Length: 282
Image (cartoon, rainbow, N blue to C red; front, side):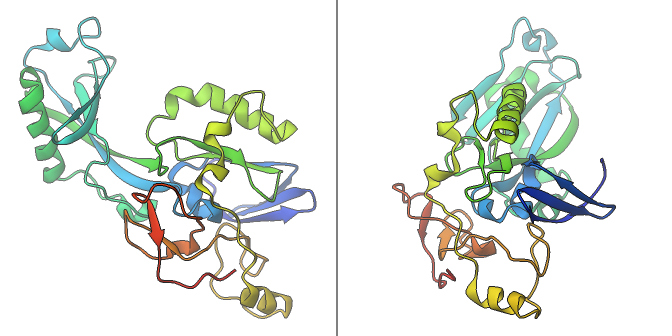
C-alpha cells in the first residue's frame, strides 16, 4: 500500500479502521511507524515526538587514506560548537558528518523541509576545518533529513494506553535505524500478544507522565448531537470521537504553549517542561 496518504483512523470494534486517499482498511491491530509524521497521526505523541531538520555533508578529504574504514572510526564528539557525528568513507564517496540539532529547526515535517543552504555548509565546514583539517577538500554534496526526537533522547515504543490493539514506535532520536531488527520484533510482539518478549520499560510512554485526556467535553457534545466539532485531526476521522491529549503545558524548546493540545504531567526535570498559560480541556 505504498504512496497512500492516511486521512484518518479510528477504533473499530476490537480492531481498527484506517482511511486513506485510496481505500478504507480494517484490521485486528494497527502499528504506527510513520517517522516524523507519527505525531500527526497519534495525538498522544504531540510534544513528545518532535521532528527536527538535520543537514549532512560529504566532503572530499585532502588525505583520503586517513578516512578509510580501516583507519577512521564512526565518531560522536561533544565540542564547544555542539555535538557532531560522522563516518569513515565507505560505499559512497566522501567524508560524511553532521551536527545533532543542527540549527534547531523544529516543526511539522512539511514545514521544516527547505533544502540545504549556504549557512549549513559553512557551519559544517567550519567544524571540519577546526577538528579534521585533512578533510577540508571540496564539498561533494549536502543532504537534509529529519530526526524525530523525544525529550530524553530515547525511543518511545509502546501500546496505546487505552487501545491495546494499537502499537507504535517513534522518536528514535536519530539512532533508530541500527536497531530496526529488534524494534521490528518488539512491534510484532505487541501486535500479536500485546506484550513483548523484550524488556521495553525504558521506552514506555508512561515515563513522561503523559496520559490520554478525557474526551473534550464540548466537542463530544457536538459530535453526539450530530453537529460539526471543528477541524478534525488526522489521528482520528473528522466528526468522530477523538482521543487527544492536553493539560495546558508547553515545551521550553519551542515555547509554543499548548500547541496541538499536547498532554503532559510535570516532569522532575524543569529543562524540558513548564506550566503553560492555556486552560486544560479535560
